[in-house]
Amino acid sequence: MTDFNTKRNLHILHDDKFTDGAIRQFERYYPHQNIYVVLLYAGSDLKDTSPNTLAQIFKIRDAELKNKIYHIIRTNNVENLFIHYLDNFKASITNKILERFSLKFYWIFYGGDLYGYLQQYRGYHILDDPGLLQKKNMLQRIIRELKYLLWFRKTIRQTMFKAFGQVDYFCFWNEYDFELYQSYFKNNAVFKPFIYYHALGNPAFSGKEKEDIILINHSASFSGNHLYIFRLLNRLGFSDTRYSLLIPLSYGNKEYADIVEDDAIRLFGEKAEILRDFMPIVQYQQKLSKVKVAIFGMKRQEAAGNIFQLLNMGAKVFLREENTVLKWLRNRDFVVFSVEKDLSDMHQITPLSEEEIIHNRACYHRYFSADMYNDMMKNLIGEG
Image (cartoon, rainbow, N blue to C red):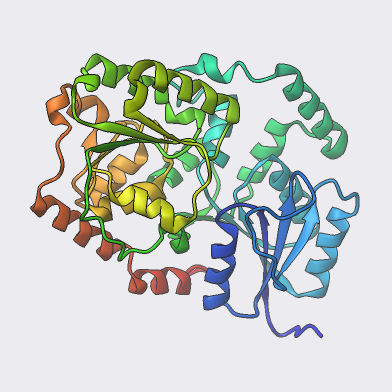
């Protein structure tokens, strides 16, 4: 029986690698106050989310999906709506919910949910090789737009714009992405510090056993601009050094991963290790712990969990000048480097000093600690 004296939080998530950790995180701080709806976008089975009694699993093609969500809201005294990653479909559902119910809208921001919109509709430049993205099937895009017009009577652009404008709380750790959001969408949204702390792995994981490895990005993401980094390293004479490359491509766009892998093998041969299979987080952390240098080609905020772990493990990290993570880290005194300004010679590919490693590790534990998480979650819901 529902306790109508208890205000509840409705979470709408999709089946991804962050969902299990998100549920554990909210249940720790707000036990028995949450209802989780996990959307299945393709197929019929959960892939990344562990089956549990807390989550209700709905398929997006369920004709009764909206009515089922409305019923949950009406019968459970829902006060707050948490949307974890605001993609096109969740934006459509959010708009429908907010037309019927007066809920507080908490956007658990990822990055691609905003940057993808800005890149596609507002001319925001995040790709060094935009031609690669244009190879995607234009017919599929047209069909998808027509489906949204039929289902929701709005284009994807209109749907996203409306949802962005209704946000009450922008929940993320990076205030510079909030500033970017506000520069495009003028509303009264409030910034709430938030991070999926389970996504950071084990902070005590040792990174002492380093090898001559350079990590390139974290996934097969178009915005990783892999080919830009490959051309830079090739121009600087990487092949004549003792280093090897570690290139994770285990998730993201498969066709793009094929292009990246082919280019890496063509330029660097056996000096490039390609990761195409998904690894459990402990095994992946073991790989990361051996990395001396990491280079990320994204002009946008992305791969933050990897970047934070690498800094804690003692790796030297290079980021693009336009990436808000670079500004965020420097503002908090991390020792971090710019691809454009600090990587003009292979002699700059040197490991951090012991003092720099200790300094970065201290910074990491200052900003990613149990006390910080407790304060963050305590102040997440409400006006505080």
